[in-house]
Length: 176
Image: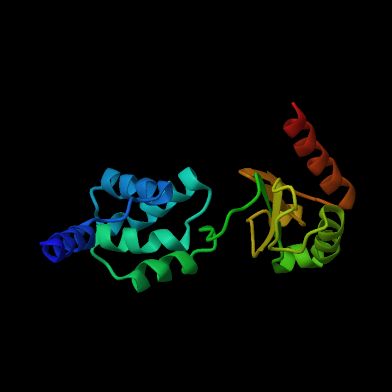
């Protein structure tokens, strides 16, 4: 009798699904909002990133299952588009243009200054999690090179002094 109960309990436990994580719940909700339609993948990924701050690799199987696609297809889209983050980023994301026009106008010096002043390499996040700096290749502001973007705000003719002023403004904003 005891073996029969143990066997039945084991079968029940095998059928039980693990409790979804908060990230998986967010993913499933985003998929449902878009009708679990594969052609809405980009919108779903944007929603997930907006809610979580990034698209965790651990959520890709849940997206794939909801959309009836392979994990490889979802992974391919996430890694193809630079704006999808696979790891947490800072509160402020600073994109520094490295395209030809900006290079001709001193973006290499600006990048070195940014790395030194924030004590983090390009692609990294400050220790306090407040700022991530990234290199991008063209912000479409070539006439005002070198250019950076902080969040959704575009800045032109950015030199070391102007960069420091922009960062100082972010710090004041955080203190308020």
